[in-house]
Length: 546
Image (cartoon, rainbow, N blue to C red):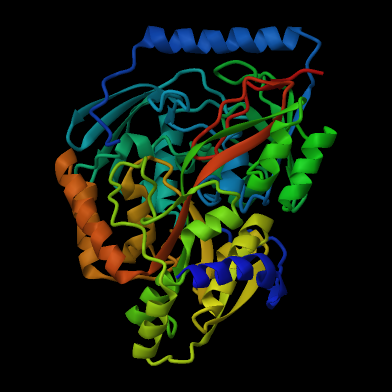
C-alpha cells in the first residue's frame, strides 16, 4: 500500500500535468444558465429591535458618507462570471455574490449569529403547522422608485416556484395569498421544517412585479431590486458595476460603488490583491494563503464552509450505469492525498455530500482508498482493462489541478480519463443537459439543513437544472427524502437522513471528495467585512480606507 501511495503522489505532482487536457469554451449562455437546524416556530420579531437595527445601519452609513478618508469604490475579484442576473435563475455562487447586493429576501440569516432576521418582512408568525403570516416592512422602495408591497412578494415567490433552476428551495409552498397591501399568508403543502430558512436564501429574492411583467427580458439584463446597490453595467467575462442605492430602507451603503472583476486564475487574483488592483479576493488558492498572511498590508478571512466538492457520474451513460464501476471509481480516489498535495492540507476528506456542520449529516465513514479492489470490481463489471472517459471541470485553476490529480489516480486502475475544461456558464448548461460522463462540482448547503442538498442532488424530480446531474432515479431514495423534509420531528428526521446516507453510500452516484474552508483575501484597509459561510458576502457595510 505504501508503494502504491507513493506512486500516486508522484503521479499527482508530476504526471498529471502531462496528460491530455482539452480546453473548451463558449460565449455566455444567458438563457441556458437557468440552471445549477430545523426551522422552529418563529414568533413575530419585536418591532423596536428591528427599528434599532435599521437606525444603527443608517447612522453608520451617514457617518461613512461624511468621512472623506475612505474610497468611493470597493473592488472585489471572483473566479467566474455571473451566470444570470435574474435571482430566480442565477443560483450559482458567482452569480449570487453579485445579485445578493441587488436584491433582498423576506428574511435573512445573520452571518455572525446564524439567526433569522427580518428583511423585507418586518415581522412574521407561524399560525399553525402549515401557515405563516408575514408583515411587509412599509416604505421599501425598488430601484425604479416604486413601492414594494405584498403583491410583489406573492409574485416573486410564485415566480421562484415556477423556475426550473430554483424551485427546489420553495416548492414546499402550496400558496401565497395577499391579505392586504403589506401582509401575506404563506401556506405549505405539508409541514416543512426548513421553510423559514429557505426563504432567507438569495434565490427567493423579491422582485418588482410590474417591471418583470412589463418586460422580463429587459429586467434580466438590467435587474431591478430593493437591495443596497443598483445595477449599472455587466461586461460579460470582465466585470459588473453597482452603485449605492440612496433610498435603501436600512440606510445608504458605506461605499458608493462596487465593482466585481472576473479573474479566473487564482494566482492572478492574489497578484491583483498584492498590487492594490482589488480590495478583496474571493476563493483564493490555498497555496497563496501563506504569502498573503505574510504580507503586512494584507489579511486572510477563513472559516469552515458548508460546502462539499464531489465528482458526479452520469448514470444515464455507460459504464456509469453499472454500480460496480461506480464503486470502483470511488475506491480509486485517495482523498487525503488530494487534500495534502493539491489543496495544501486544507480541507477534510468527505463521506457525504453534506458537510458535518449541516443538520442531518451522518457519517458512513470515508471510503477506503483501495486501487487493487477497484481493479477487481472493474473486472467483475466486464472492464478488466479499464475504459476511457471524460471528466468535465469549469475554468478555475484550482479545480482543474484537482481534476488532473484525479486523472492520475484513475490511470492507476486502468481508466483513461480525458479532462475537458469549460467556461463556467457552458459547464453548467451542458451538465444540466446531461452531456457529461463525469464532472467535478462544488455544492453549498445554503440553508444549513440537509434537505437543501439531498432534495436537489438526489431526488429524481430534480434532474438537470435543479442540481441532480448524476440523474439518479431511485424510489427508496425519493421516499426517504420526502419523509425527512415533511417531518417536523427532529429525531425522526435525523434517523431518516441516517438511512439515506447509508443508502447513498451503497449507490455511489456521487463521489464526495472533500469539505472545504471558505476564504477571502483582503487589503488591511478594508473595514466592516463579515464572512458568509455560503460565500454570499454582503458588502453594504464595507468600506476601504484610502
